[in-house]
Each structure stands twice: as structure tokens, then as C-alpha cells.
Amino acid sequence: MNPLTNVRNIQKLNQTELQLGTVGKKSWHDQYKDSAWLFIGGLPYELTEGDIICVFSQYGEIVNINLVRDKGTGKSKGYGFLCYEDQRSTVLAVDNLNSIKLLGRVIRVDHVENYKIPKEHGDEDEVTKRLREEGCAPKIQPSSSSEEEPVVVKKAKKGSLNLLPSYVHL
Image 1: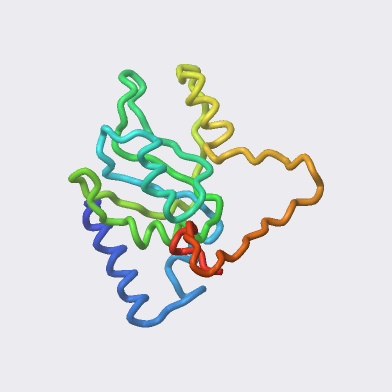
Image 2: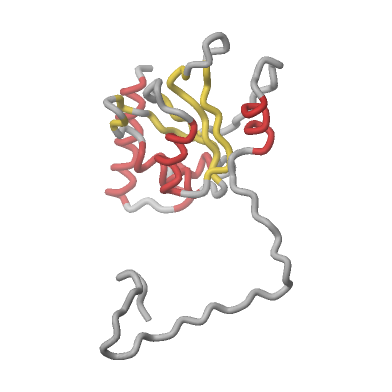
């Protein structure tokens, strides 16, 4: 099936769910509730893993990415797979990023039910091997103290200059 036809079909499914007010187990997303992996197709060839992470991280914490590359040249083939920390992020990404234009190309974003991490072929560089093994999620350092210190925020005095950002309300 043509990739753009798939994009339109997903858009129709989402629109129908919105009109019917479908929530939870009635949703077509429920079939993929056990997988946090996404397929991303139609990517511009010049994008890197970091670029894709920048676009997709607005919907959740990304823990792994596999941008498929040509073995000989190392250039992107224009598709890849991405894994979120929380499966609910996949629903947001599919609903909001499927069919957007990215550098002049319409991308396709869809769920992956059973993703199998590729086996090493021996010709990957060290960075690619480490990325496949560990993923790209930030490593959280254990805190040295058992208790966290509370953060104290004081209200500004009347007439003084308030340097807090506008989104912080006291």
C-alpha cells in the first residue's frame, strides 16, 4: 500500500475516534498497548538521530532509536524506529506527528507491535554498538544522600523586581 494512503487511513481512524468520543479499549491504539516502539518513514535523508530525537522528544522521553542506514555508505535510508520510555507517548506521537511535513517531506509515524532489535553485524562503529546496547536515554545518577533537601521559594517583596519567569506562580 502506498505510504501516503497509510497516512490518510490513520488520519481517518483518528478523526472517527474523535467524532465518536472513543476512549480506552475501544481505540485502535489499544492493540499496541504493550509496545513503546514507533516506525518513522519518509524521513529526509540528511536527518540524524539527534534531529529525530529533537522532533519526537516533545511527546515523551526517548530511550532508544534505530535510524536505518546503508551498510556501504552509512547514509540514512529515510526510515527508522524509535522507542519511548512510556507507551502512552507513542499514541501522542502517532496522532500528532503522522503526516507532518519535515524538511519538505511528509513523514509517516505508526505503531510497531513486535519490534526486534537488530543483531550486530560486526561492521558497526563503536558509537552505533553502544547506542543499540544502552539506548539513548539519559543515565540517572543515584543521589549521594538518602534524603533530598526541599527547595525553598520566597515571595518577592511588594515593589521589588520579580525575576521569576511568567509561568511560575506563587
